[in-house]
Length: 143
Image (cartoon, rainbow, N blue to C red):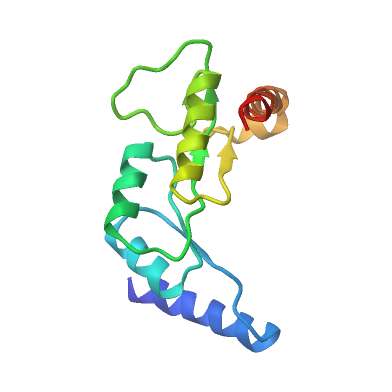
């Protein structure tokens, strides 16, 4: 834990020395340490693949400097009915609904991650591009 804090301080201080001001650092994770680091070092909390309800809870309990979540884009034809459905998982309407909720929670940036652990997927990006295109088209219709 101390080593990560030390690394973040070095990165922040190096940027500050070279650029005159430290750029915003996105701190990933959702542990108590990640939240503490976001407040101390970060420009934004960057939670990874959480349900909107969990993100809403963390944001309600903590005054964070920014919010830029990363969600797993798993597009399906039918709604997902899981109680703890991660943001970005479901049919197009659910995913656009997630994006609207995240914007309402203060997200100025949302990273949509269409890859799910298999490095070979990046060599065959067609399905990822189709999913991103579908969500972008639906988003334009409601925004």
